[in-house]
Length: 621
Image 1 (tube, rainbow, N blue to C red):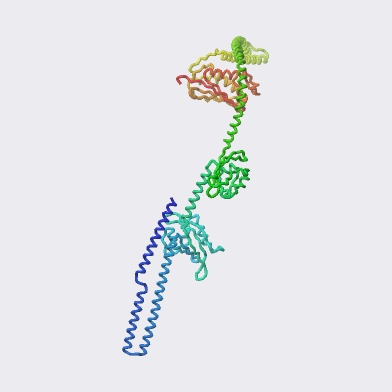
Image 2 (tube, rainbow, N blue to C red; image 1 turned 180 degrees about the horizontal axis):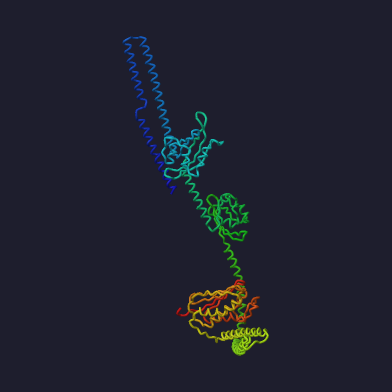
């Protein structure tokens, strides 16, 4: 927009110049048509001559040829000669002034048409004369007084104030000249570019040194340079945004321009990609040598497509075309993936042929194996029947054994409890009381083990039935915490109940309580003194999720897959002092899955363990 405005201003200035030229020509014609400026003095001189002649004639008539007449005649002749000389001198001066004005006007019109102005800087008085063309270039009227340097600086662009000082310092430079460019503010607020050039003059008739020179309006040139720069930048951006390597060589094989992809593909740094770099040296540096295509034909015959392999192993497909100036344009496309696919296809073809041969061999083997599998299937069916019978026998044996063991264990637990409490009197030695406590603890532990085995055998035999009902989880949680709290106090482990209100679930109360007791007992067992256990719950979709998270010893990542299998335990220094069957977590997982939920175990060794399980909500919820 600014460029268009400056063009319009140039057209307006040209129109103004033509109008002023026409006015000047009309004024000159009027001056030629009017009376000459020296006509009136000549008329006065003629009348004076006639009057003096009449006066002398009259004097001759009265006195004749006397001395008075002679003196009067000489005086009249001298007066007329002097008057004629004065008239001629005045006419010459007027003609010279008219010629000077006309030449000055013609000179100003020539400078105005060429968008040039004259500078005359009197260094002694520090005053600057501008020709009328200078004021026209900045859209101002020529004032009656000369300008000061500060007034010029006020009109200059803030970034170009130093150029005015450079002109002033010309007298101190050896060349005693200046040649600089700067911007002046136009009356409409725009900036006009000026190119000032001149010389220091001094001596002779000049009172002091002066800076005299011309100033040319180069705004159009600057706008054109800016447009060229913008066009070059857009072209550079376009070349740089291309995904292929682009390079332009001149007629002598020197680099004109290239994008970063070209340097990336050939592994060339910016130091080797400067304009004018010889193509041969660049290719030697890149390790390509003579492999880079260079056509010897001109015109369309110079176009072609070539493939080369770079030292890095990358393949390039190079399209080449000659320019009208005799240079070359190369566009390189990375076809490494295509080459690799071609090689892979060749390898795959060989592999496929080998596979077909192997398949033929395998087909024959499979036919033989099929016959063997029929025999194995028959044997498997027989062994499966035997295994199922053995599993049923095992479950029945465990159930019967558990029933037979519980009767004497109850007696052992009961009698040992009586002996420990001293219900019928003291036993005598304190050791007997200690032994009675050990018998009671061992019997209780053995009874729990038998109960777990019995429940596990029932689940495996498919005889475990759940009595599901709408269940308030908060009640079951409180009961479980009461049963575990004593053990937690002894172990100096803090249990935090962060459950909050939860909706009703469909579950078997005894089974849910057993799962919570197993998880809380394990957390207390494997959490060192001073640790904490957090019990949390949340609702997600149609399920409630309950989690027990401790800050205990954790489980190694390699042992996590074994946890949850019956009779599986992770050996550690801590677990050696807390014996168990390994059935608690497996039994809990089975009870949760019977409810249609899932049990998830997350643990980090040395950080803690988190066990979460889900239970379905009631239909009303």
